[in-house]
Amino acid sequence: MDERTSTDGNTLTVPYSEDLRGKAFRVKITDPNGCSAVSAEVRPAWAHSRIVITGEPADQEICEGSPVTFEIGIISANQAVNSFQWMRATSEDGPGTPVVPVVPPAEGGDGRGPSYRTTAPAVTEGTSFWYWAAVSRGDCPLVSSRKAKLVVRPKPTFERASWIVACDHQSAEFRIEGGSSGTGGGTTLNYQWQEAPPPAPALPGAFVSIPAASNASATTATLRLPAPNERNGRSYKAILTNGFECKTESTPDVLTVNPPLQLSTVENQGNCAGENVTFSVTASGGRPSYAYQWYKRAVPTDANPNPLPMAIPVLPENDINHANTRELRLTNLQQADNGTIYGVIVRDQNNCEVALCRQQDLPCILPPVPDGAGTNR
Image 1 (cartoon, rainbow, N blue to C red):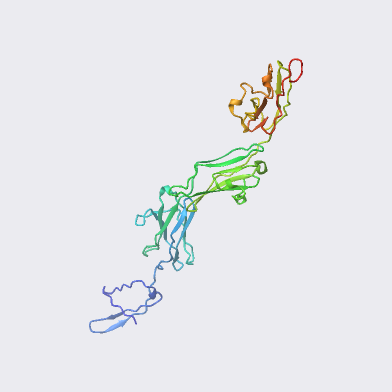
Image 2 (cartoon, helix red, strand yellow; image 1 turned 135 degrees about the horizontal axis):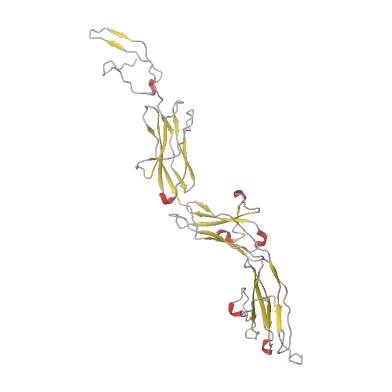
């Protein structure tokens, strides 16, 4: 028998205890003469079950902009929670601000409890936040969970992604410009290019990483594709990763290889001194209209057998002024013109180009110029 004495007259206040749940009370009243009487049993009707937090929210570290979930477990004897609110603060001891939306607790008291789902703030708003749950029911005291610390890590950034529409049989490039590991992200920044087959737009699961063993540029800021014709219509994107393993992806771009630009063959010409000669080409394919630029290589000598640069486009000083049509007309040929090599570069509206009279293909050579009698010297 557990006896308790009231210090407040005929009122007995009994603090709540789980041990008292379901137990009965009887009141014994004793007068000054020692006579006493005992009442019938009385069972308290506890209005609400005490809220017990069985699982605290855990600290988390996550990349900015990523989803994050905080959870607590509660036991409430299958009673509905009248008040349930998640709070957020920017310092551990700072005042809390209610967060939205409010996620109601799970019914049934299964111990897994309610959760709050949100998106990690940007690092520019701060790098650490504290979240906790406040739960109350009726007249029961407010119960708060521990404060869980959220550490936000930066994601890599870049200014823009650029690409070059490739020309037939010429290399293509995709480029990330202004790549950074993010605010406070350190010095580590890794690139990984991925590709997906047609059709576009490609689904996220269709992308696979390009091995650096097959293309060394696949782990750099600029992806170079030396044979774009084989990859026409494929999609490409870059994944940037910093030292916190936070990632940022570029928007996929589709490689477009323009149709080939073709030129008719320029025939070699032989003429007499004082006469005129015309070289002409016909462009087709690509994207009309076409821009022409004729150039020449000086007469080769033993000291300078290849005076014209091999690279294309040819240096401007080799261009022939005003020679920008499909025909090149030379007048009043002289012996000094013997062996001079003429060439033409043609560009279409896609800025794709094709050239004749490159070092490995010299069809438009002006042979030795005969004299007026038509004999060669």
